[in-house]
Amino acid sequence: MIFFFILIFGVLFLFMNVRNVAPGIKGSIIAGVSVILLPVCFLLRTNYFASLGMSFFSIWLCEALMLYILWWIARGIRRAIVKKPIDKRLVISVSRLLLFVSVLLTIIFRIAGVSANENFHVREFKVAVPTEQEFTAVFFSDLHIDPLFNREKMERIVRVSDSLHPDLVLFGGDLSDVVDSTLSAWEYDFLMQKLAATAKVAAIAIDGNHEGFIEREGGNYKKWMQDNGFLVLEDSTVCTNFACITGRIDHSVAKMRDVERKPLFDLRPSTTESKLPWLLMDHQPHGIEEDHPGRRPDFAMSGHTHNGQFFPGTVIINWVWRLAYGIGELDQVKWLVSSGVDSWGPPVRVGSDTEVWFLRFVPDRL
Image 1 (cartoon, helix red, strand yellow):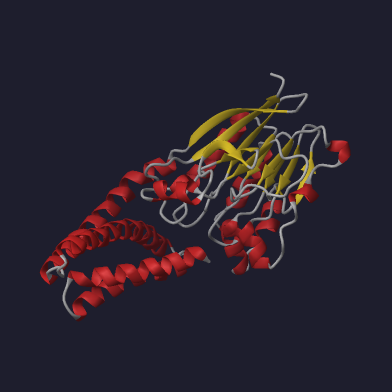
Image 2 (cartoon, rainbow, N blue to C red; image 1 turned 90 degrees about the vertical axis):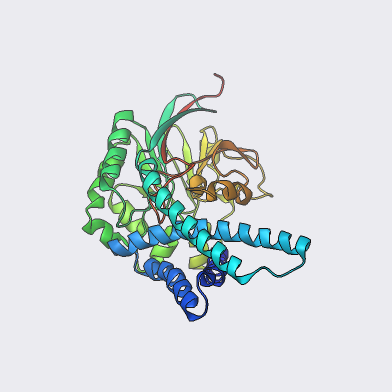
């Protein structure tokens, strides 16, 4: 909900500023067309050309907002010093310049950021946990399959996972921005089956906030994933012979369904399984409940943030989340926040990477 309020504010703020590029009704028409195209493209995003439009205008929205906010700050400082209104001709000239610069930045980001989005990194990390035997996992999140998603990238993910021979394949949510019937029509079901088969023990997934959006449109993410080889955990725990994995229902999905998330305490491994390492997957890295008693997970994994995806989001994201990216700690739990293997909206990365994690869980005595 906060995101949509911010989006509405951004659209109105841009309309107020872009209409200054020309006097009278002409400026209002230019501003109106500029700000209306983004929500129109968003509503029609399952269409390839609408997705291209959304890709362009969502970048432009961010860059234009940044420039116009800086312009308003400069105007405020000038007004405080000079104490005179700014000349209207100067306002028009600056507005035109900022519009040109924002469009130019958008084009540069759109061209330069595509290759960074496509060429994901495989990052390895050794995790010390209370275990008697080593085991491995491939963890990734945020596929965001849509008309602009490169199918060959999914094929590479399958090949990478197959080459690593993981015990577990773990998916951290936000599979797609189209319904599951479209995924099957695009034959992603076969690729998902191949990916699940690369796990020696189990392929496990959780939902993300976009699964809530798709569910509103009639999609059934859980059934589709289970039909294609993944166990989907929604506030539930499953144990193998070497680890217990808890998957949380996403905050947005729970809100959409009007249900409460279960306390983490209720999802802890049973007494007979308490000697196994306890892994937690939660799409959004909010941490755990402040009043959680007793044992805490040994390691947790999230996605969602995209590490800001592109500038200025790469800066702002660190003001939004306590741990926006990387390996750190939340509420006394060692936590990994992945930047995701793809992007939402524009398939663009500037200042952040796409990635897959290969995790080696080793005895903590080492």
